[in-house]
Length: 111
Length: 116
Image (cartoon, rainbow over all chains, first blue to last red; front, side, top):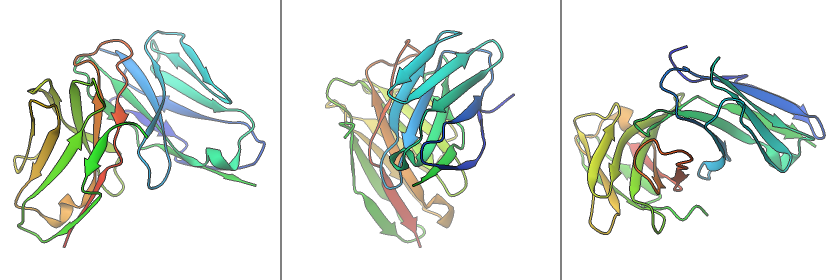
């Protein structure tokens, strides 16, 4: 994998459903994986920064895991709520400190 | 509110013109990053400054330049504007400058540039 790729591109779920998305990235020269939540007309909001293989982070109903050896990260949302509707971005950081972003997963949660 | 401020919020200009976008980082952050979000593209890294010095460069066009001032605010200058430069320009800031552990980047609200 040469770029950061996210799947699916978009997702529509019912309130209360649990969901997950994938971020795939090059595993060489890896420093950190960032997850952001981006609501329309707002700035991307930092969710997690993960650096170590096997890292797991949790914030409320949202959690993330990291596999640096195979180059992927999963983001999970348990019991989705309408306010979770947003685009979820992942970004890989190497030793140059710049973030290389995927194109995001657009989540829409219907009441 | 991330603590990163950007002005102006919107900018409409004509092709061939020059504009300046301004960013003030969070208090205490030394690094400023500029990103461009065009239609159908993800956020693209343009350039990073750390404590006044250029630290990393992405796919930034030669018509674009940036600087970081002693008070740590940064400006992105876009000249000879083309229709394709229409995009959302984000500034982000962080404490550290190089690959350091949990070096979280905090994003400003963005400047939407429309070139007519």
